[in-house]
Every structure is written in C-alpha cells, then in structure tokens.
Length: 148
Image (tube, rainbow, N blue to C red):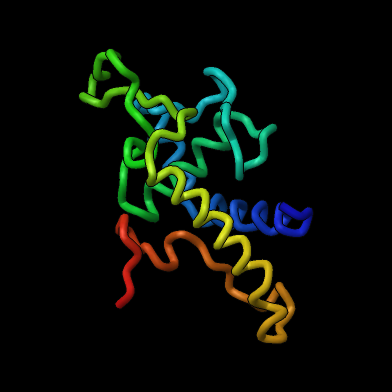
C-alpha cells in the first residue's frame, strides 16, 4: 500500500470510529467481548495499523458488526474446546485466516480506501467536500450488501 492509501484508510477508520456511538465499546466491555486495554495485543493485522492496541481494533470490529449486522464469528473462528461465556458465546480466535468472510473483508477494506482515495479527484471536488464511503454505505445492517 502507498502512504496515501494508508492515510486514506486511516481516515476511513477514523470516520467509522467517530460515527459509532461511544456506548458500543462500553457495551462490548460489559458483555465480556473485550475492548479494554488488557489482553494480548492483536496479531495478524494486514490492513489495520500493526501498532494499534487491542481496544482500537475491537472498536473497528464492532463497527463492522453494526454495519453488517453480524457477530464476531462471522469472520473469526471460535476457539476450539473453549467453553461458552455466561451469555453462551464461545470466545473467538481472531488471528487465523480460516474463513473466507475475513479474506473478503480485507478486500473490501482496500476497496473502500481506494474509492475514498480517488473519488474526489475523479469528480473534481476537494476531499473536504466529499462524503466518505463506509461499510454501512452499502451493507446497511446486512451481511450481503443491499443493492436496492
């Protein structure tokens, strides 16, 4: 990725974080899904910055959950042999790339960054006047993007 694409991706992610209600992160902590500063640092980050904390990554993932109307296990595998928590949810192992949905998500993150990086130039508007594309722009709460 070029520096410009990385900056654009960062802006997209920042927009996602600003739009999401701050209560989503707090709700995730109350439900035992993480979001706090504790826990192991994230591994296998290929699109998101590698120096991000677990909390930063979890906040973005919660944005994906809301935009697509899915749970974490849509893209991540459940830990083998792990008992469910008090809410009946089996913990996930976020690092493996076993699921096609995770691979697709990475492609779509690159696509969104590319659109946001080039759209303003293509229509002759400065970046400050262009509405940025996000996952929710097309997905609108559905795992499959809505076309109508």
